[in-house]
Image (cartoon, rainbow, N blue to C red; front, side, top):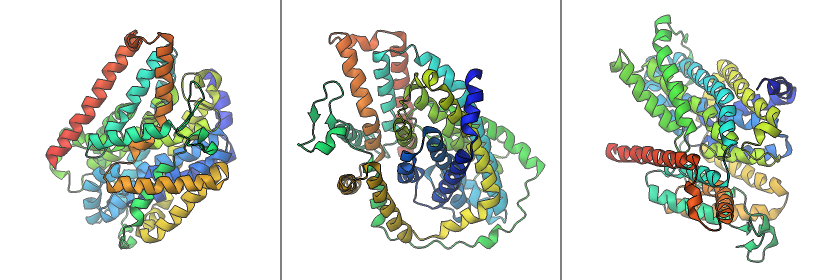
Amino acid sequence: MMEYIVPATGLLFTLQNIIWINLGVFIGAVFAAIPGLSVILCVILFLPVTYTMSAIPGMMFLLGIYCAGGYGGSVSAILINTPGTPHAAATMLDGHPLSKKGRTKAALKIALYASTFGGVFSALMLLFLGPQVAKVAAQLGTPEYFMVCVFGLTIIAGVSGKSIVRGLISACLGLLIACVGSDPMTSYDRFTFGISRLYLGMDLAVCLVEILAKAEKRLDSLKLDTAKMHDDGKITKAEYKRMARPVIVSSLIGVMVGIIPGTGASEASWFSYSQAKNMSKHPEEFGHGSVEGIAAAESANNAVTGATLIPLLTLGIPGDGTVAIMLSALMINGLNPGISLFTTDGDIMYAIMLGLILVNVFMFIQGKFLTTLFAKVVSIPQEILTPIIVIFCMAGAYSVNENYFDVAIALVFAVLAWVLRKLDLPAVPILLGMVLGSMTETNFRRALLISNGNPGIFFSSIYCWIFVVLIIFAVGTIVRGKLREGKAN
């Protein structure tokens, strides 16, 4: 580990990286503060910017968006009782009531401090757990990697919305799209219909579904009075003491949830909020402006960020949809996530892991000085933002290979995605099917080739059985959560 730290710091602490981190943090916070716009949309929109960068500044830029997005959603949740991102819904329960009591700045400060603690805690867990997981991953063969891919596909159950069946339908469509192009084993054309440009497969243009879904809505401008942010923002020592235990416990919960594919920040924040209420000496305050409730929710959803990178960097399995997009930023630089990265490109991996700590530090600094500015963007009408974002998406599609064919593909998939949205089919499972499809197919076919077609190879080692247990546990946990949601509704 130590032999990589020194060169990693040299790669990380450059003016270019510092600029891209701060730009990513600023963009992520602004995007997440606007209700209806998501962090994953922001990452998709700015992903083409990283195609001309090397691996470290590109990842620092995207990680800045990712981490700041976790904090930015709390701004609108506290100010206007509307979460900027789904995982800020738990923050809203106590953040807005505390704001209505005349303590808006205090609520925003608690959210910022808790988010920073959770983010740094998660980054440290990535730094120390990542290499250990990589050592275990070094012992995995083709059958084990197929089981890892299947484990990764359990993400689909967690991002399927209200209906797992609809999520599975979307995922199958994503897997079908992943088959377009050359066969990974034989290089024969598949589903290209004689179009040579499809030989290399499809990009992630399907994610434009989020934009088109908003384009048909007419949203009223939000009226925000920033004058109510003129309180002193003072947090008492007693309140800091009350927040300490929920922040630590929630950060641990966030890390554990983030490591498991298919869960994510929303689940972590709600679970942590519930635990904080159960442990609190003042549970009656929850829902009425509890500082413990805000701290628990915000530390948990930011603690997920670093944890989702653990399976990505060590096994090549994205922990959630946003991290799946980041996979492209690594692969465009010839870095295929997995065990080889920690041996062949250890300095780059440690630079990225150390950089996550730096991202959270700059998020804290910007939050301290720019919160008022972040708050003002809440009132920007979405009917103005949406056309601008669509234009940038199309420009991004063109910039990938600098040809108009990619723009045409983006338009086709955007229309298809709009139809799927009308059918109430979620978009993220399609994305995950596209990301994991090739990897799953390649390892499956290679394992069967090694075993002369014997499917028993997938249960031939202790690691295979470990992943079988993890798959059952992950699916069971997610399904139980869905059933609880159904009962609550």
